[in-house]
Amino acid sequence: MYRKFPINYIDIGIKTKTFKESTKGYIKEKPEDFIVEEIPFLKKKNENGNLTYFTLTKKNWTTTQAINKIARYCHVSWKRFNFAGTKDRFGITKQLVSVKGVNPEFLETIKIKDITISDIFKSDEPLKLGDLQTNNFIITVRDYECKNVKSVIEHFIETAKQGLPNYFGEQRFGLQRPNNHLVGKYILKEDFDNALKQLLAVTTPMEGEESGKVRKFLFEHWGSWKEALEIFPKYLTPERVILNHLVLHKNDYVNALRRLPRNIAKIFVYSYQSYIFNLAVSKMVEKGLISDFEIELPGYDSTLKKLGGSIIEEVLKDEGLKLSDFRVSSYPEISCRGTTRRTLVFPDNFKIVNISGDSYTVSFSLPKASYATIIMRELIAP
Image 1 (cartoon, helix red, strand yellow):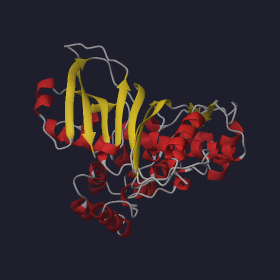
Image 2 (spheres, helix red, strand yellow):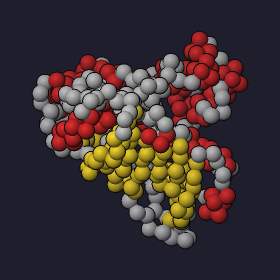
Image 3 (tube, helix red, strand yellow):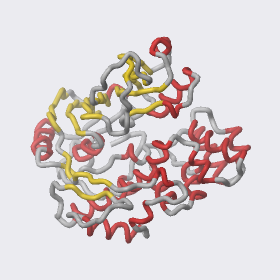
Image 4 (spheres, rainbow, N blue to C red):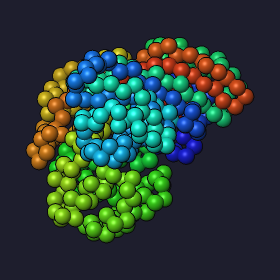
């Protein structure tokens, strides 16, 4: 599905595919091949509000990298920024962002390559993760291998109306380094040494040469915080924040993690929770038990008495964890109460936009927290 980043979906808990046909092909060959527009909940404008809102349009930036860059231009901490959801790096994406203590007039002066700031207004209503209605997608698939591509897509559209597994996508785990869930698992075990080793020092062949090289150095010289800080590139901002703390407070792993914005640190725990969900839904598909219902994502307040709870329990046992482990005593702020998620997702308004000799383009909408790449995997993967 990715020519540059061959994802092994088993590594993130996805072991099944329900649509039996395939067009094959590749997505995200160009930024223009993957267009995302977030449809947020409207915020009430207030000229005297202490928050400045803006629409962030970016190309080939992660959400966090783009915000880090804007924060440096504004001479403020990145912790002042909030957004409803992270968006793909490899594409053109549009989303709502808020920042505290930055004037709209200053934001208007910022010029950064492949980043556009627009629709600026003031409000006093906070922006939280999940504060969005839907995401709209326009996706191009290149080099497909299917003689009857139109009929296969039309068959897929009909199949999708019955619902597709609502797996968490690879973005939840990291595209170039799909190990967010492993960081999260170590956090839940309160093994912060290995959590930071996963975060700072583990690399993959899919990562860039420069960042891969410095991570390998740190892996082989774990504890050499000052030397690592000197060679870690500036664009690895979260890693440098952690290393700065470790230079001053050697082996103070938990407080080094605290140096990250809390919503970033929570992503690791949520990613592991997502991994458990993917494994559970895979088991349901394999056993022919999949249907549309809400299943509990594990947390310290979960009961697992709802439908599907026994499968979540089985997966947790295989992983060597208990529900009580989702209460992180050393860092209570990132503890996870548990929540629910529907097992199936129903793409809305799925259409064929264009079919040419070697590519096709489709468009559709998804509810928040569902992944377009997971939908496209069902259509593309052999």
